[in-house]
Image 1 (cartoon, rainbow, N blue to C red):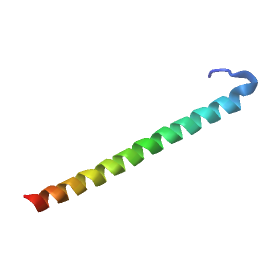
Image 2 (cartoon, rainbow, N blue to C red; image 1 turned 60 degrees about the vertical axis):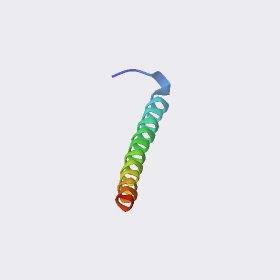
Image 3 (cartoon, helix red, strand yellow; image 1 turned 180 degrees about the vertical axis):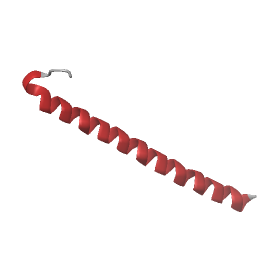
Length: 48
C-alpha cells in the first residue's frame, strides 16, 4: 500500500469524498437524462 506518512487519513478521506461526489454526479446525470428522454417522448407523442 502507498505510504502517505502522517497525512494518510486526510489523503484517503479526500479520495473517498471525491469518489462519492463523482458517483453522485453520474447518478444525478443518469436520472436527469432518463427524465428528459421521457419528457421528449411525451412531447413528440403529442405533436405527431
